[in-house]
Amino acid sequence: MQEKGFKEGFLWGGATAANQIEGAYNEGGRGLANTDFLKFVAPNERKVDGATFAQTYESLKTAMEHEEQYQFPKRRGNDFYHRYKEDIALMAEMGFNVYRMSICWSRIFPTGFEEEPNEEGLEFYDHVFDECHKYGIEPLVTMLHYDYPLTICEKLNGFESRETIELFAKYVRTIVGRYQHKVKYWLTFNEINMSLQSLSTCSGAMPDHSLKGLNEEQLTFEVIHNMLLASAKAVAIVHETNPELLVGNMVWKHLYYPKTVKPEDTLQQMFDMNLNYYFFDIQCKGVVPYYLDRYFLQKGITRNYSEEDLESLKKGKVDFISCSWYMSNISEYQGEPMKFTGLLPDMTRNNPHLKMTEWGWSIDPVGLRIDLNQLYDRYGLPILVSEFGIGMYEEMDENHKIHDQGRIDFVKAHLKQIKEAVKDGVDVIGATYWGWIDVVSSTTSEISKRYGFVYVDADDYGKGTYDRYRKDSFYWYKHVIETNGSEI
Ligand code: BGP
Image (tube, rainbow, N blue to C red; front, side, top):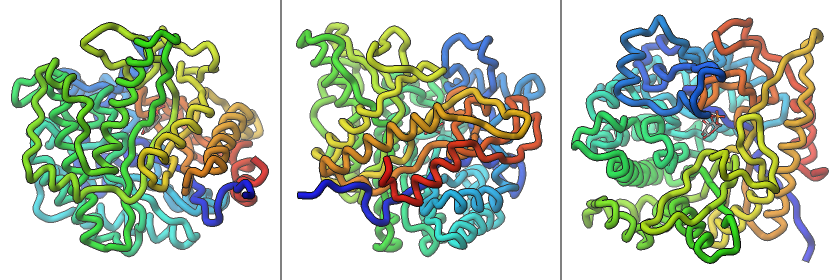
């Protein structure tokens, strides 16, 4: 048997999300989104990392009433709306054959409740997809990446309401019908499990706005239930619209290591991993696993999956898996009933064997290889690594150069482990590097948390030319693609 590297036709590309790049929040007939009200909080004013990520009804109202007092960087993005041609040309220069992006729901249905879509919004994405195809770049489209029409958040508390499933299905029918000959690869929800960490951003449901008076934990699983149903519906719509299209899920993949060799720590790890697998199991196998039932019982969480719901989940199995990979974490037993360790970094659980990014995210390429193997073993489906990346503080020198060796090392280490997974026998079909161009951060709303191979000349307050500059990593990644990763 000969060891193999990346296969022919491997999908090489980059990823972004509408709310982090487009800007133009009040142009083209677009309606307001929840993300338009996520405030930038300067690092020295933050109580915890990710301070701007969570939204409550109270914080939303304050932001709406005192707009002039705050910075809302997601309204500006990196100005992709006006510069998409230039950006797609840069992707082509690097040799991308795939571009992962998302559609902004409120560009298509400004409040979510309209009967007819907004043609201007639809046309914008037509232009983007046409531009991609001009260079042989296949768009890979996330239907929903954290941005909800604001009206749906206010009236229905996002996915707390089952009515949102129907509104989402209408939106999905519209975009899949319209773009079926331009977009072959679809993903339903970005990081569907992020509701466990930041309910509002992921599901549009604010914890202090529950229509049914649910506490936060009950509300979380109510929206997860509804989002899983909505995802299954979306998969069925894609398959019914055009059997040639492929649709995947997208889960924040998180690996947990037991803190010690004490058996209870491994028990905790099993529990934490199960909370991750819960989403994959439902989306890949179409059945609801048993292992959270006891937890639900202890928490007084009732899941009302009707016979019809269960049928719908069965029909909603994805064609391929996709996941993001940023960090691993450590599981430490905290007694019964079990408590969830969480997804974002907890500085008290630092892994002494791993380095951290400037934002305290552990860097664990080998963990990615472990996860890819375990996912493939469990589901046997092709896998796309739909996000991995590193945020860094960076400045241009006087010659407009950015020497980002740290990013090159990071990407190289991760691609090496993806390649190892391929050699292990895992069917990895592609990798889309997160934030191939600097974008506004999802958790902190900083553009100064830079991910890109391309630098955007803008700061957190919207100052700058927004011109694009190639970093050292741009040329390095271009070479990786040219050589299909053979030198990694
Ligand atoms: C993922 C999101 C992305 C992206 C990334 C990095 O969870 O899908 O939208 O933002 O994390 O996070 P951040 O931007 O906060 O550094």
